[in-house]
Length: 151
Image (tube, rainbow, N blue to C red; front, side, top):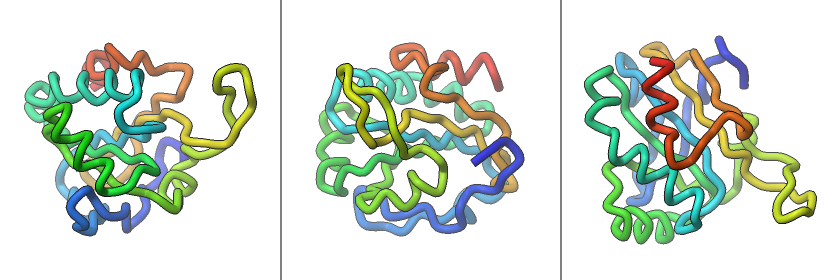
C-alpha cells in the first residue's frame, strides 16, 4: 500500500476473537503497525514504546493496533506479559500483511527469507494512509517518538 491508499475494509480478528474493521476507526486516526513476532527483542521494544506513549498518541487523536502472523493465544499472552494497552490482530494466514505490502522477502540473520516486513502506517479519519514507516526507518525502542515527530 502507498500513501493515499485506503486501508482494507476488514483488518482481521484480535486477541479475543473480535473482528476488527476499518469502519471501527472511522472518525479516528490510527497507528497500524506490522511486526514480525510476539515476545522477540525488537518486537517487544516496539510494542512497549507504543504502550509507553499511548497517552501522547491518544491526545493527538490516534488509536493503536498491531498486526502479526501470531495466533490470538500468542497475542493474548504477549499483551498480558508486556501490559500492552492496545489490541493485536492475529493475521495467521498473512492476508492483511500481504494486502498492506508488509509481507515479503527480507534478510534475517544473513539469509533471505519470506516474512513480515516491519512497517507502520499512519491512517487518517477516513481510513486513508498518510504516512508510512518502512523497515529501514523504524527504530524499535524509539518508534513512538518517531511517530510523534511526524504527527
